[in-house]
Structure formats: C-alpha cells, structure tokens
Length: 210
Length: 210
DNA sequence: ATGGTTTTTGGACTCGATGGTAATAAATCC
DNA sequence: GGATTTATTACCATCGAGTCCAAAAACCAT
Image (cartoon, rainbow over all chains, first blue to last red; front, side):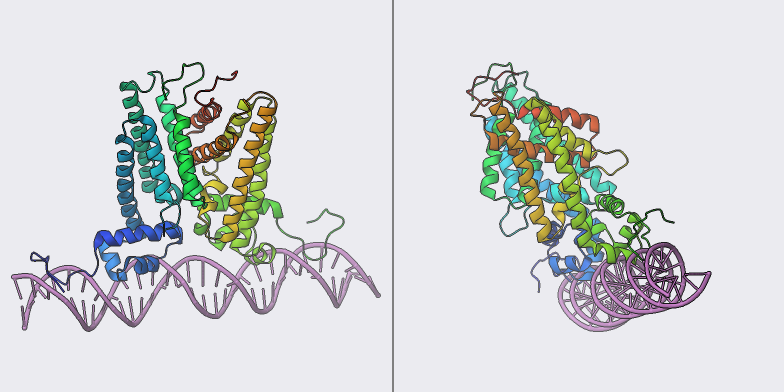
C-alpha cells in the first residue's frame, strides 16, 4: 500500500493529516465546538479513535490547531483581496466580498469558524488567539488605508483607525447575516455598499474623487 | 410561608417563575446553549429538577422561552432608544449605545444572547425566530429613517434600506467586539462614530445640515 | 382540629451517550 | 524474523437526560 521511498518506519497512516484537519474544520463549523463529540470527529475526519488521540490529541487541541490553520488561510486570502487591487474601494469591496464568500460556501453550513463559533469557546487560549486575529485584521485594513493616503487617493485626514474598525464590524455583521441564511447574492451587494460607506468623506470635507 | 390570600391550592412554589427565567438567561448566556446541562439550569435557576421539567419543560423549551422574553425586552429598549430622541443622529447613537450597553453589562459575561449564542443553536424554530427578530430590528431602523425624511432632517433620496442594514451590521459587529472583551467605553465611542457614519450623505449629494 | 386533596419538592433510579484507555492485530521497514 | 508504528476493537468509568416515588406544604371540608 505504498510508494514513497523514504518512509518513516512502522505501519503507514491511513489518512492525510492536513486533509483530516480540513474535515475537522467542517465538523466544528457545522456542529459548533460544544456540539461536537469525539465520535463526530472520528466519523468526520476518517481517523480511528485511537489514532485520533495519539496523533491529534483531544478535542480542545484539535480545535486550536484547526482554528490556527483556518485563520492563516483566511488571513492570507484577506490580505490578497486587500492589497491586490490598485483602488482602495476595490480593496475594501474585495475584502468584504471575501468574507461573504467564505461565509456562504456552497455545500457547507453558512457562517465562519472565527466569527461564529470560536468566540463561544470558553478557553483563554482561544480567546487570546481571537483577539490577536482581530487586531491583525484591523491592522491590515488600516495599512491599506494608509497606502491609499500615500497614493493620494484618500485625504490625509481620513479617520483611518475609526473606519478600519467599522470595516471589521461590518464584515462581522455580514458574516452573521450569512449565518442566519441570507443569500450570497444579496450579501455581495451589501459588501459593495459597505465598501462605499466607509470611504465616504467626513462631514465638512470636500469630497475626494470617487 | 405564605401571604397571598387567593392561593391556587396545593403546595406553594418555592421560586418565582419569571425570576427563574431571568436566571436561566444568565445560564445560557454564560455557557452557551450546548454547554448548558440540565443540572446547570437546576443550580442556576434555583428550581428543583422535577419542578423544572414539570413547570418549564426541557432545555430546548426553556431556551425558546428565555429567548422570546429576552428579545421582547431588548426590542422594547431598542425602540425606545430609537424613537425617543428628536434627532436621527441621537436615535441611531442611542440604538447602538443600547446594544453596546447590553453587551457589556457589569457582572455578566460580555456578549448578547441573540447575537452571540442563539445563532449557534441548531433548531429551526430558533433560526426562524432570529430571522424574524432581525427583520424586526431592521424595520425599526428603517422606520426611524423614514421619520427623519418626513421631518425634513434627511434628504428624501437617502438610501434607507441599505443604511438600515448597515446599522444592524454595525450593531452586530460592536456586540461581537464586546464579546471578545473590548471595553465598554471604547465601544460606546464606536457606537457614536457608527451613527455618524451611516448618516453621511452619498457621494455627489449636497451635505445636509449636521 | 383533623383528615383528604392537590401541588410541589427532593432524592433516587435507569439507561444511554461519551471521553479516554488498554490490548491485540496489521502493515511496513530493517 | 524482529522492531516500530498505526489500526481496530473492546472496555470502563463517568456524566447527563429524563422519570418515578415518597414526603412536604399548602388548602378545604367537616
């Protein structure tokens, strides 16, 4: 049952580790941490009970690993959406659309592991991770705004921090709306509108090009 | 152990029904539905196991009742915040502040039963209720916008529906931020800023008074 | 008062589900 | 064939949901 030349001795595993973790993500996503029993992971990951414990550890450990991997993927996607387009508006729209798309994936329960399920996990390590991740997302958006200022696309007195926080808040709101079953199409439109909203000039300022 | 003159026969209850429900709210709030065992309710509500089943029913039934009561209180508070102030800006700020305050109550776990815990309950009735509640909240904000238009405070081409949705999204975002441990003071400031944001004139429109 | 009736109480009990471990078999390398 | 790692199955101990039953606390009638 093998091809690989440099194999690590002993009976080969019957599953792919990262593949199993992806499946675990789905399990937690759809059943929400507290709702997940070990047997759900056994069934969902395609890994025997014993192997699961020896390779991945207990439920909490698995969840932390899943969460970290998911956050990394999502963060990378967000950064790409944010820093690829030349125009700030497109960056924000892409960022928000990305959130919406992740939350309305076909064939998967709507919602988001980080926004909808992880916050309810009563664990200090999870909480700290979420705080850090949120701060990271915020910093990303802020940086994009500053880039826009440098590029002369946004006035230099643009309230970067405030608006960045509002972008994050709107993203969370959209994600929760998705979780409640809002259709992707409508949410994508909301994402566009949200991007426009947070770029509006403050009162009393001459509007920028747009 | 009695004062009431017209008593309903039989041994009197040892607890106050609505008081017990309030305590149940705290239990679900802090332990998040799936994390709640019957014994948690028994301990938290101050009601014996047997009485709990015979008076309130099982966990799901209790949660639904708790949720309905909570939604009613919260909806009333939101409506009051929204329709008491004469200026739209103050209405929105009050609405959002109200959400923040509810989510950062002293001595209680931060967050919100409707925003943070109920969406994860895997139950069609709960989901439907949440959808309806969200629609209700949205309608409230829309109505306030229309009132503002009637009063001449807002231009008649104000994108009511879009902005109302954004108010809701921002409220959700603020609530989730609270759940993650953001301090009330900062969130209250965010609420104010969010209220200003959603009232900004669209691009290409002459700014209204403000 | 006193006993009957009604409702609540508190504890005991059952039984299935679940987390975690141990023991044995299987697959691979050396 | 021996060593090493994984897979499979069985097992145990605990926890939790829901029910049953006897005792308690009130009311009512006599």
